[in-house]
Image (tube, rainbow, N blue to C red):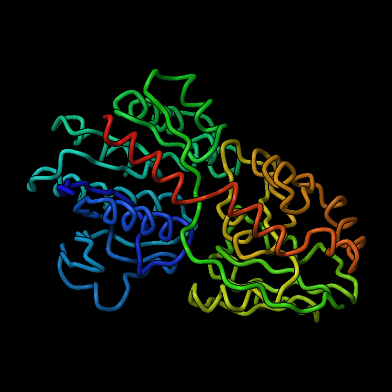
Length: 387
């Protein structure tokens, strides 16, 4: 098989943790296995702490080969501040480094661009369009619309600028890869660029399900980013958990400190753990909890695919297309988003019999059959070759 080169532009990559980092790593390895020489350009690792990791602090640029992936790590002014101006400066600093990377380095003919954040996606699309590269745009969230729906942005001049950048990225791409049908529908309203549905399906070998009876207390688990969009802190404060229910929380993020200080005997915060360790730990739980503060158009949390591949039925409290997938493929319960009364009623109604309605073996079988990374990548690889 003759090797071809491809460059992946992403704001997140290992050793950073999280869904975005895992997704880009899985894609990079799949491309490599299919015969590509894969380059990645990304910031120096800093997520979610907002501090550049030890071992990466020196210099403006660092090139390494990790798992046979050629990784170009660029300087940025790292920040995870809630101050919008400081966060903007951080994004612009990486966009500046990325511009220099495109200007002073010869890059492959095919560029895969993770669209969010908007400034980073726009920078990569602009330079790769100017240098006549083939441009594949990966849209995981509909920014700036998602920011508006989460209350992080308001309509005005700044929002209009972001919209113009968004539409430029759509029009100037060779192929747009969207992680939901809603995203593709939104894109098709604004351009005629070809689209491809590519869900955020993880690629790992599922474990053997532990054979154990369902007992009280029933254990719910959340694992992931503890941010404003997830709203775990508010949920933990508002929710009244009966004695037969426990909520276990893993992860880090802006709300980690608030959650760790909550003094409720049946809410247990475990901090952040390595992904392999987490997958092993998750086997002891009965239900995975997936919340969002508000329904975000286009968003389908990748936790749906990861949790269910582990055999965990999900209590889905995030709305939109994700809820439809949970119901259609019998992966758990779809609770109306932002409706705390409905969530409270669901929690109170939980018993051993209700959990038995979604056996872990059935959930895992449905998830693997419906959301298959290798089959999805095979179709995507054909799309790349046809560009």
